[in-house]
Length: 128
Image (cartoon, rainbow, N blue to C red):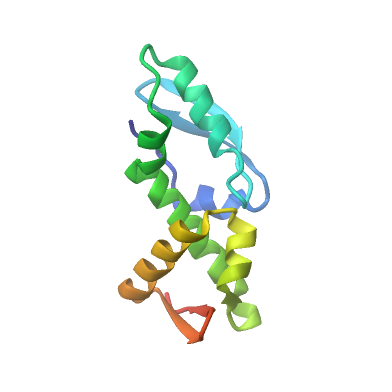
């Protein structure tokens, strides 16, 4: 499965802008994405309804594209918080609604890639 989402679309998610996302060849749906990713379940259910063989929900969740969308969402939250000199990891979790364990993996990956740094324990800042 391929989901095409560009960075401009991710930047507009906080405003709740409706965008068309291309899915599986010619199938396209228009969804309103919001900052906390609560529509991901609805998107998965809609995609499953279009397929002859529904996707395993766990397989869908672990899909690389979904991971990239969540990572981009976390990056955007951190960038927006830079005017406040960073953000607490627990506040990122509240805004993104991403499970704690998965958020910890995303934060660790961003730290390793040098996109962010831990300003003090539990608080991160954007390096970009």
